[in-house]
Length: 328
Image (tube, rainbow, N blue to C red; front, top):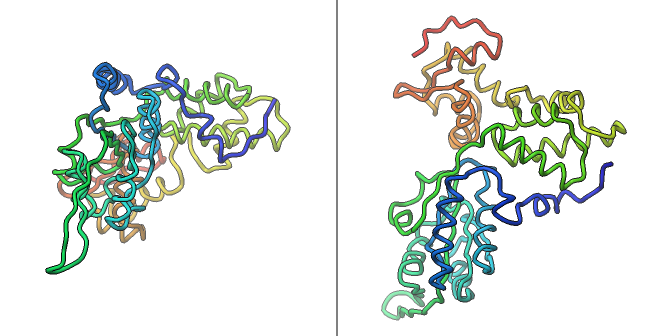
């Protein structure tokens, strides 16, 4: 039986309510639990925390879990949302003792705003500058003890002074197949969907080892079954859903295949510089580095070398193409 729900509430529904429901990232959970338990034992806020990794791996979920574990209020914003120092000052001045302040996309913080964060993180001071020139006045406001949790897909773009002020830095990696399967089973149960093991395996393999993608594919399977009056998601329904979405059994989407084919057909398989490749694809370099390349590298379809990007024999085989290039 398929129960209708609004998609805007699904993310909250599928988000784990406790550590036992959080599947995968075992090393991070173990280390994080030590930090949080020690802080609770001392009756203090925990150290500032930084989570980094590809989109959809659970950084925001971990921030919510930290807030729940510490029984604290979670204040959420993002790097691009804070355009002026006054935006950050307004948030910091309204924090209460023990609050969790979560900044998503922290690598996109304005450098001037970072300067305000340093004393706030280190000595719990908010320095406010009013006026310009000889009439400039500086005020210092004491802040209550709080924890800053930041998430980013590009830890390399964070400034060294900001990165050094985090007491815990955690890299989220791609998930194992069995963990993705368990996530799909859990989500299906929460959504009250009947799903066969074969369908779970098919969706997990095509989920790019990423929980967010797994849940998105599950929801599209739910839609397919509703439209076609199917009572459960079986292997055939899962396969047809992927076919409609133009996603192959390895999780490659049309843009991934276009990326590989352009390197193969226009640049003889590489090496090719990322800027040249971005121009050929009419994409921003950051899109290539953040979205296209990480999963292709995980699959072993792409190598980054000092000379440029190189397509591997495995990619030729997957695409059914003859490898005539001299690969590095």
